[in-house]
Structures are given as structure tokens and as C-alpha cells.
Length: 253
Length: 186
Image 1: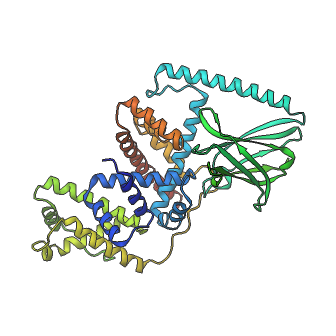
Image 2 (image 1 turned 180 degrees about the vertical axis):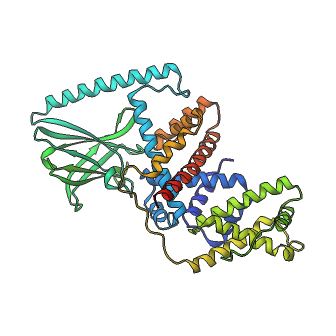
């Protein structure tokens, strides 16, 4: 059974404690009688947790998730498991980029394609770095990749880097979970959320097959401390919509 | 909770007979009801959910002689009514909120260690599937899953269910492993 989008929304609302009492009874009773429904609900439950950890839940869903969904010990265990799985999957994903996979899911010729792409990325990346160095008379370029910050990310997961005196600028790659806008605006904020620098009209780029926004910052802007980049997308009618927040820490030199 | 109520074999047989005349079908219905009860208690933020599910079943079994002749409809719905009553009772009894979800500051958490062990217990095919299925985010994730489903020659939803079942078994394994580690430490 594949749930219709309406069913999917209803299950989500049920899991987030947002449906009226009479509907709650209907869904609850169905859990006891309909095996396929039980399975579908469990899948939606896992997907909600994954989206929470990925930082892709809407504000209202995240609020319900934190106030209702994880209010039991069992649910917290599920979230901890999902977090471990997420971490393990990202290790596999990184390893797959470094060495071509031997998995039975990918044919021999795709392995070669991945290897060729990897070589191209490395060579291209090196050339880009050399090019950037030549453009940057004030010093070396430090390239950093940032992923959107989930609400509960702990300190150990925030990207940290040091800025040695020879670094002139920082090349930040902000990975996009979903590329929905033609242009973006990035606001750099310090630990007290004071706006320090704004870059407008940023165009999304494809890096290693994934969408990202690139922001180059002068290293002089960044003294040791915690920073956030608030990324918003610009709609065709000129409105600004919040997309994601990226956190990083500049360590003491 | 009244832990003195015990489900005797005789009561259990009566319960199965009430669920369905075919004992095998009744057994399946019983499993589905118990599993569903546990989920309902979890969704309602209860603790000791397995105990609560057993309590609900015991209460129904103990009421069976009074209700089975006149009860109309799916017996499972009667269980639901008892479960809701238990949720209310349990809310009154335990008012201490669960502490907010926080991560262990230590990078190597027991879940991760256990996950590595549990992944080893999967077949290569299932391990590859689960590690590939949950890769990427949003658009790239959808594309990745479509490629996987095509490769396996199954529909996207069939893949989704297959991945869920492997994840579910992994989660059970990790839960048991973490409990063992925790009890060793205490």
C-alpha cells in the first residue's frame, strides 16, 4: 500500500499530535487492525525523524516534533538510532566518493564513471584552487564545505577551522538540501547573531552533482568565535524565504 | 498498573477464539494488536510501553466473559478503547516529563558502536541496501532511490518498505545491544 499525499499528511499530523480527538481514535484503531497502515505509519515516523535530523522540517513541524514527538523515552531512542544510522551512512557516502564502489547495486561501468568523475573533481578542484590563489594576492584560499544545521546539532558536529596568517579568504560551500530558488542571499552573523556581512544575488551551483551556494569571505572578517550563515532564497516576486542556517567556528590561530 | 492480573492459558485461548475462529489467523491478529498497542502508547508519550500493552490485553481477557456474547464489531476496536483508558490513567499516575532530547557530548555513542555490530549481522545485500537507501538529502535522495529501485527491478514503494523492514530489524538489534552495554556499565 502506498499512502496518498492526504493520508501521508494525516499520519504526519497524528504523529505530531495535531489531529482532533475523533480522528485520533480512527487512526489509533486502524493501527490495531490494518497491518499495512501500521507499516506505513512506521515509515512516515522514520521519515519525520530523518527530516528532523537533516534540518529539513518546516518550523511548525519542528516545533511539534520537539514539543510532542520526542516526549517519550522510546521516541528518543528512535532518534538516537536514526542519528547513528545517519552518521554511518555519511561515512559510507564519503568512502564511496573516495574509492569506486564494489557494491552489487552498481554496475562495473558505473564504477569507472565514478572513478573518472572523482579524478576530474580532484584535478578540477586543484586547478580551481590554483586559479583562486592567483586571483587572491592577499593570501591562500581556505575551502570549507558546510551542511545545514539541524536544530539539535551539538558542538562536536559544528565545522571548526583555524585561520593561519597566510589565509587571505575563506571559500564557503553551502550545501543545499533542495535547490528551489534562482538566487540566494547569505547573511553572516556572529555568536550574538549580529549581522556582519551580507552577500546578495548568489546563484546556485552544482558541485559534485549536488546543488550548493558559494560564499567567499575575506579572512579579516573572521576573528575566533562562533558564526552562523543564514541563507534565504529569493522568490520570483522578490520575497525572501528562509532556506537554512549553517554554523561554523573559527578556532584561535 | 495492576500487575496481579495474569493471563492464564485458558483465558488466552478464549481471547484467541474471540479474535478469530481460525487459530492461526487469531494468532496473527493478536500479534498485530499487541504491536499496535505498543505503538499507540509510544505515540501518546508513555513509558514501559510493553507493560502497558500487556496490561491492556490482560484487562480485555479478564472482561471477555462479560462482553464476548454481546459485543458487535471488530474486537480490535475494544482493545483500542481499553488502551485509551490506560493512557489517561498512566498520564495521571506519571506526571514527570521526560528530559529534553540531548546528544551525548562523546562522539562515540553506544548507538553507533552497536550499529556497526548489528550491520555485520545483516546479509551483504541488506547492508548495502540500507546504507545506500538512506543516502543523500531531498532531491538527490529521491533520485538515488529511483536508481536503486530501477537497479533492483522493483517499484519505489516496494523499495521503501524493504528499507524500512531492514532498518526496523537494525533498530531492534541496536536497542538490545545498547541495553546490554548500559546494564554492563551500571
